[in-house]
Amino acid sequence: MRVAAVSLRTVHHERTAATTRFQSVLELLADGGFDVHVLCARWWPDERDVVAEAGITYHGVVPDRDAGRSFLWRLPVALRRLGPDVVHAAAHRPKQVTAAGWGTTLSRIPLVAEWPGSDGHGDPADYRKAARRADAVVTPSRLVRTWARERGADGDDVTVIPDPIDLDRIRSVDPASETDVVYSRRLDEGANLESVLLALAELRDRDWTATVVGDGPHREMYEEMVSDLRIEDRVTFVGPADRDERIAIYRAGHVFAQTAEYCLFPTELAWALSCGCVGVVEYHVDSSGHELVEGRERGFRTTSETELTDAIVSAGDLERRDFDDGFAEFDRREVREQYRGLYDRLREECGLIG
Figure (cartoon, helix red, strand yellow):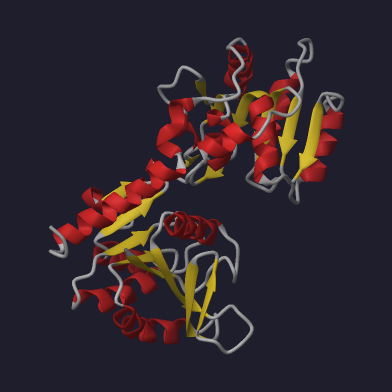
């Protein structure tokens, strides 16, 4: 199946939550045999109109990444020339969803909008137009689904498809040295690592160790906080780590703490839970972290510092595991099939198959 992906800017231009999510979808599809073509601004240095990388073909619709208006004008013609089976547009720039719609109407090709939840470039009216124009809207979590509906998306047209994990890869990585509590995220203004550190400080009289994965502008502040709380001998900051290094740490961990104030989809939590960690999530109105632990025996949802401390203690009483097969729905193969099923359903509705 040929998929035309629409995004003026890609991860090659800027790495944001929205472009990273969209790129992960494209790579997932390409790995599954989809013929993926990205219509974007040229990001490569030479004058070629088309380049290929990692099984994905990129078409430079415009030479300048800032030529947004020119991109919108040229997009419908570029889509007609490409002749895709489905168009998948990144909605963090909502006008490109509407412009893509101009190129799909006459051909009756289905249009899917990947709703970002962040990094938006457009006013509410633009998002409402994009939501109405798309045949289906995809969001990474129920939280973002709510935001999409608030922007005008029809609830029946919104499908939640999570970020994927790789269960086979988890099985292939050996656990690192044991640790009791793991926290993993970029250490910026939304990290809220202090909630975890304060909770652990309340447990000084217990035997525990903690590992913090990630780097960022607030790392030094958190390292100073650990020293002030007199728990520096128990907390290890490992800095940035690649995926296999994170898997090894998660498989060796007992409890994974998710306390970030803003989270579109708790990707690291999903990996950690699949690695056998018990999930402890602090609820925040702009975070979807709680969605992965609700109704799960090895999951705790907290709303206060006291509850967070108590949950870490209770989680520590559960057995250690280094793998949990209860998260197969998040595996790459399953997530890819959700996209395939959505495309097939929309194409059937358009009379293209059946």
